[in-house]
Image 1 (cartoon, helix red, strand yellow):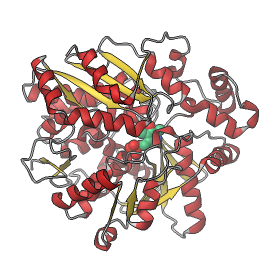
Image 2 (image 1 turned 135 degrees about the vertical axis):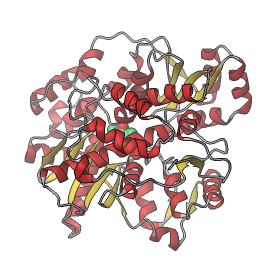
Image 3 (image 1 turned 60 degrees about the vertical axis):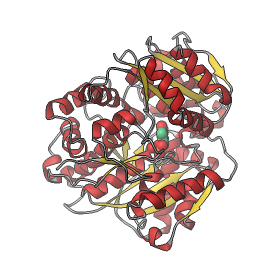
Image 4 (image 1 turned 120 degrees about the horizontal axis):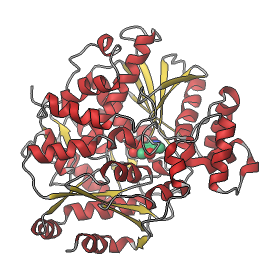
Length: 495
Ligand SMILES: *Cc1c(COP(=O)(O)O)cnc(C)c1O
C-alpha cells in the first residue's frame, strides 16, 4: 500500500514520500504527515535477529513507499557505515537497572547523526526520482547539534549546498568549534545575535518567501530543510526505537508483547515523536516520558493542556533543548484533533498570534501515553554526579535531564516496566558542564584540558570527532543580526 503525505494545516493535494522530503515544509506552512502510520510487516522476533541496517530497511520501507528496495538499501548502506564508531550503530547499555540507548556514535557524536547521515542520500535520491535539476540548498537553524550533523552529512554532496544559522551565544564552545571548522566548498556557517527561536523563525520566513523562491529558481536553486520538521529526519529516527526494543527482546530482557517505557530528552519534539510513531507501528511501548530542562513548556503542556510559549527563554547546560516552540509537536496535535487540518491550523495560528493554545478534554484523553517531566540545572548536575558515582558512567547534560526525570518518576510511581533512556549526546561534547558537575575543581579549566580529564575520569577514549577539532583552523566567522539573515543568504547564493 502506498503511503502518501499531507500537510497538517490543509487537506490539499497529497504528495509522495520523496516529494515530502524535497519540500521539507508544506506550502501552507504545515508539516507533512503520513496519511496513516503504517504497521510493521516483519515480526519483532524476526527483527531481533537483524542488524541495524536490516532493521532500518524493514522500518523505513513502510514509510518511504515510493523508493525502490535498491534505492532505499543504497541510502542505508551509505549512511550507517564506518562513520559510526561501533558496528551496533546504537548500543544499548544497562546501568543501575536502566537502559541507556547510546545514539551518539556517529560523526558528530550527537543523536542528530542517526538521521542526518542518511538524509542527504534520501534527498539526492528524491531529487533524481522527481527529475529535479535545481541545486538543493539546505537552509537550517540549529540549537547546536543539528548544524554540525547536517554540515557533516551534506558537505561536498553533489547537487547540494548547505547554510547553517546558529545562536552565537547559545551553543557550547565545542559545538561552535565543530561548526566553524567545517570543511566543504558547499558549506556556510553563520552566527546570529539572537537565540535559537529567532534563528528558527528567520529560516521559516525564508522558506515562506515566494519572491525569494522565484529569485532562487531563476538562478537554478531551491531550498530544502534538514531541520527535524523534514519527514526524512523523522522516519530514520523511528528505526532505533524498533531496534532497541528488539535488542531487549532478543536478550530475553522482555517477553513478547511486554511494554517498555522510553524517556526522551526533548527540544523540538522530533525524537519523542519518532517513539510515538514506533508505538503506532506496533512496538509495545508503554509510557513516553518527555523530559524538559528549565525551558519546561512541554512539561506544563502535558500537565495542564495549555501550550504557552510566553515566558523567559533560559540558556541551560543542555542547549539542544533550549526551545520554546517545539515544531514537531504540531504532528501530535494533528493526530489528537482526529487528523483535523482546520483545527490544527487554527491552533497554530493562535500560537503565532497569542503565543498559546489550549487542548480540549477530548484531545488530552488521547495523550495518555505521554508523561511530562523536567529537571533544572542543579538537579541535572546532581544526576551526572549520582550516575557517575553509582555506576561509573558519565552522562552528557541532555541525557542527564532525562535520567533525572526518570529517577523522579521511579520514586513516585509503581510502574515497574523496563525503561530505556535515549542518550542523545556524548559527554565529550559538553565536557565543561559534565566535569564541573562531577567535581567543582574543574571549574574554569580550558576545554581541551577538560576533555583529557573526562577521558581519564570515565576511562573512555576521546572520540575522533573531538580530536579532529583540537587543531583545525576556523573556516567560518560571519556573525549577523537576526534581521539580516535573508541578506546573508542572498549574498551567499549570489542573488
Ligand atoms: C536535538 C537534541 C535533543 C532534542 O531532540 P528533539 O528531537 O529536538 O526533541 C536532545 N538532546 C540532544 C543532544 C540533541 O542534539
